[in-house]
Image 1 (spheres, helix red, strand yellow):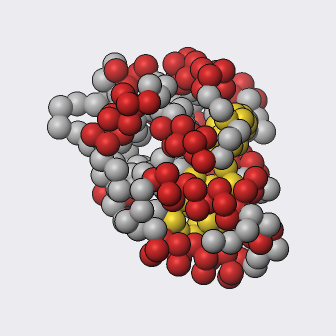
Image 2 (cartoon, helix red, strand yellow; image 1 turned 90 degrees about the vertical axis):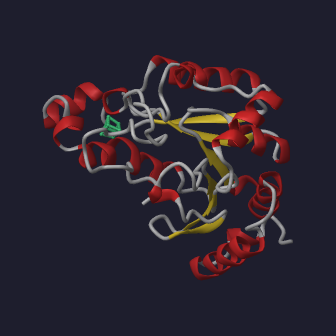
Image 3 (cartoon, rainbow, N blue to C red; image 1 turned 120 degrees about the vertical axis):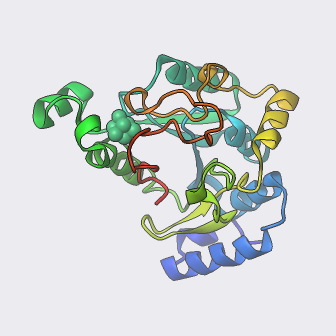
Length: 238
Ligand code: SF4
């Protein structure tokens, strides 16, 4: 296993090779072991990103890296329940919550681009309120972890447990990629992990309020995001 300092000076090509090798080696590993590898390899240059849908990956990561950075994107459009979940995570877990915000407030964006840009051009809205702030917020890290799961939607079916994020030139760790919803539910119960209250109120996935609705019978977990549009991802994972 590599020391935490080595990736500080690694080139993008070396990091990519490291990620691809780890993806193969750790494909069958437990989520904790995947995160332990990331913590040992990258140290403080590793963070978890969380939408505060639940705190499962943050909880797992805190078990292998005390005080791990948990990066949350506050788009200005979140449900109050999501902000409350963020605050609760910050209060009770052994993590360091870092909140990123877009350059423009919602009011400033409305003034510059007109109201309800999310209805007229959601890709542009996501680019300004999610993609750009995350790109800037991740600048100091070599690797980031997500809660992506293969069973969430067809677009996530091939998610590697460790892969290379070409857009950001970083190692992307998805320790629960192989988990099912049942695995998540069992972990939440076993460890008393914080979850967003909206998951108990008909939502399968929780994003910005204007672009999220409750699920209908038989829909996959992400069907309530940008419902009625062809858009399925915000650009963070594409
Ligand atoms: S999810 Fe909707 S409101 Fe949130 S940034 Fe994207 S388009 Fe804007």
